[in-house]
Length: 233
Image (cartoon, rainbow, N blue to C red; front, side, top):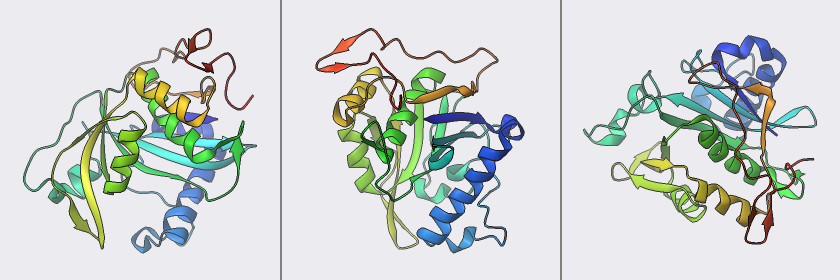
């Protein structure tokens, strides 16, 4: 299930976060070749992993098998401090309910949760978390092929600038807005029943101390999909 950990609470989840740092290093440095992020301790941590970062590790049988990170746009983030040139001089959205979506990846394996590939659980969980937490818009710097995936799976996508070449790859800055209809689209496409969030493990609410509450899908029918159980049970 997808845990939700605020950076300020990372010390309370030290074992999970140690897995996160090593998982990120293995995936981004060893697997994808991000040599600029290589560290001798095999832990991939950058300047944006502060108290305001939101960590979304996907955990199966106690192991981190997928991960995504959200960064507030009211604080320094990748587009503001590392890649502003992608905007070609234009401004980008920022606000309390606008976050940057970064470091999204799952392991390459045949592992599944209730017959659903972990990559699909991860992408669904990011949208569900945004809806539960009240995050209205995500800013993403990504490859155009992922833009097509986001559109086809129900995200409301808007390009912010023309694509640019970055380290030999085509990258385009976009906004992606979550919606209830989009989450239902994920569930129907991937055959997911119920919530994929582990709100009991680490109920990260970036906007206050109130506990996060699951969306009321449990007793509803949507087409052929019954949300009466939680994925992974």
